[in-house]
Amino acid sequence: MSGGYQSDVIISGGTKVLFRDHVSHGVPPGSGNSEVELSQPYTLSLASLQINEGIRIYTSGSFSRFNNKTLRLYIGDEEVISNTNAPAAAGDFVMEAFLYKSSLFQAKGWATLLINNREGDVRAINPILQDPDNPGGPEDKVIRITGQSSVEQPGSITLSNFIIEQI
Image (tube, rainbow, N blue to C red; front, side, top):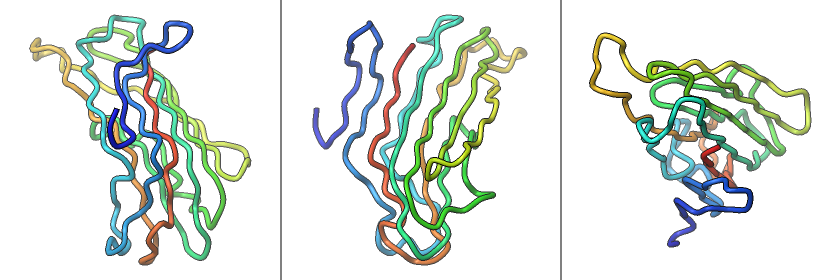
């Protein structure tokens, strides 16, 4: 393990950790109000998942005070969940998503985002894994976490954990 990144580790119960970033990352200086990566992205090989197998994505961290911030989770090009509609001023967040391969062409799941222990947002996830007219196999999906501040404020969002497990 180097730089806080870890991959392909079996933990108790047989769960396989595909990716783990446990080093705190914040919105860097000079990013203004641009959307920035809060961790190294992870590329999920969907061909490695069997039907009815899936992944669990877990992230946690904190928001600093004084301005509006936005946190987003992407799977491929799809924004899975974010707090864009309800920007948070300060506090903690926990985001979790489950995604199961339901067929060669489709996956299903859900994502939740809790901010400051308030009632969370839950959304369905239904990404297309493969175009049925293109039998070349499922496309890999890049999983990434981004942050954005309404004004220049380094460290306005700090990601403490980003874990992806195969379930």
